[in-house]
Length: 326
Image 1 (cartoon, one colour):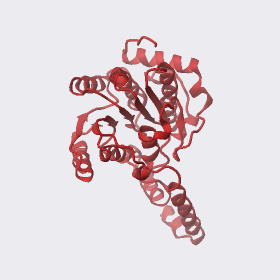
Image 2 (cartoon, one colour; image 1 turned 90 degrees about the vertical axis):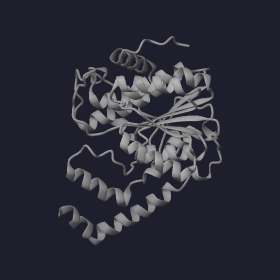
Image 3 (cartoon, helix red, strand yellow; image 1 turned 90 degrees about the horizontal axis):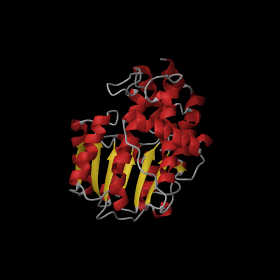
Image 4 (cartoon, helix red, strand yellow; image 1 turned 180 degrees about the horizontal axis):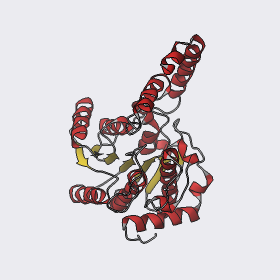
């Protein structure tokens, strides 16, 4: 009732309406996927978390550009629904579903094995899958659930697919992070649950910070390979990311989202900018804001010493053999 009372206040309503208009105008400035002419015929793309929200719109845009598009989804039912929707909307029959749960090392390895057995190239990898509000829990593989889902799963998947991306070069990796990474911590003991972040908000922020740390370190390791990697902030988007929170927080998010937040289609813009635009050719190791502008991340995200330490800890946590540095 208190929330409804706020909406009924004329001053609050007027301010909300003005802010909504301002945000609506700002969303439509700058680069737009709809006017970008890049065609991806002959290219292959993988989008994780493609059954809903931002991921589905990223996959849909890549498919309309004629890319062979692999939807990497945790749920078969939701993935099949997205598959049919994207095929119908784009007319592209080369859209395929493969199951992937980024919280599970076994699932990530199984996905990579199947992909490498079936595909001959990989030009674009968008690490979009993620979660928020998960309870603190250590999985059977010895990983903290949220950090496995948001940080370690994408890290492992990228490493397992790097060789095929190198042979497909030029190729691009896009990691979906968030502006909230500024409030995160890089504590390697978070990865295995040995230590706990200070609350759910800090846990999520820390996973998003790790996404950027991995991006910076991977860019250093990929110099000269023709594979680039960048991280993006999609904006504050009305998606299902709040599904693991209590009901009243989901309700408030839904109400505010209708007025102020980006749609999933709008939230896909910065990731698509890094995945397909000519403006980003040869750019690597950077962080882009939701308006597709280069933005400085938290300083330690670009610290090589921090990057090496987190990389080594991640390899140890998931049992990934160290790759030869090039």
